[in-house]
Length: 368
Image (cartoon, rainbow, N blue to C red; front, side):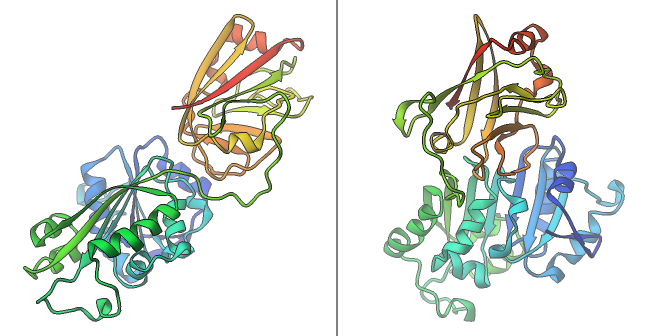
């Protein structure tokens, strides 16, 4: 991904981005960030958050990208990143990075791709969202009697009927659930707080449509599904919120990894597999794909059990490994991210139970 750092473009990897974010939450993304001032104010108001501004025009972001590199006493911020990209060219390295997404009064192809829905563009917006992430969208609406900007001249009018029949279905088909739609005037437009909003609000006849939506279902996976295993159980049919599978203990289960938990179909592991808590797992990729959003995972062996929590990664598609990570690295092997309890935090007595080669381990994944 192309990061604008101190006025210069630098290639940034997902691992590097994860390092910048660290433990900061929420991660807030502004798409079509314009001059970047909105993101800067978000970062200033929420110092525990990490804020990302994305815009196709590098020149728009140049001034703010230099500002954030200053000393803190001169306005510098270490919880902001500016990326240069067209929306439909957002890379997979931003998969599921955002806890909240803003699209404030878009213009140009971003506006066109929402008002006349383009699946590629809308899917790119959905791709960066964690399941459950809110999308806050504001669309400028031309009113009768106001001069028509050239960019709006070839766009349909945002009438209630057009919104209901075209715009909202476009969002929903791309993985969003629309929860609220309202029409606001120039004063509310000004309160959006962007430079562009203040300019548009100078027209007293200006109106905008504000849409609240939530990222719901994961994007369609491209990898092949595997058939359900004979022993994995989907406890309530094909749309279950709970799934249980079985795995076995192994003498090399050590549970010392500080960042992950893993279950594997392999029957054998070495002592280097410090995150593995179960082998010979009989989970079904097809059934796991019905589990989305935040989950609670219970591991039970004998009379003992321990639990942890995480958030399902929509990019998961591995039929052999099931990895839970503290980070948000969205690899195909990563079933869930934002893990709150890595292997090293399980009690040692419980880990000893899992290391018994005769242990029968039951793992239940429950969607919240």
